[in-house]
Picture 1 (cartoon, rainbow, N blue to C red):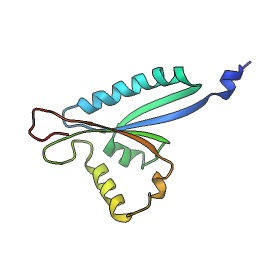
Picture 2: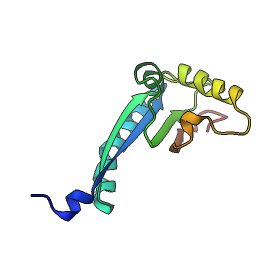
Picture 3: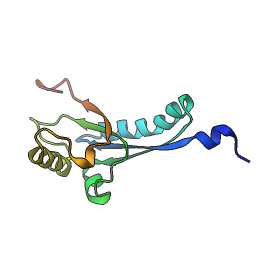
Length: 127
């Protein structure tokens, strides 16, 4: 027998895509996913399924199957280059920018996203 709370709960997928030169963003993505369900499920009657992937693996393996919520984590590297695991994703984003000027691409129209950028203050210019 199910309770009223169980009947009204829903599942939300959260995808964390990351690119990392030194592994800091990968570690942040792992930690975020581990804590997301623990923290968010307490507040609302929602089952959270959080998963993480490099940006390029998401493009290649998942064929850009976007959930409703995406968290983008990346680090700064060099002078604007994409870090490891982010080359194809950057090319994908650049292509989206080239195709659209004022409207949101249909594949992203229902997407909610958050971004986190990590930088190293040891460099003269960091993000």
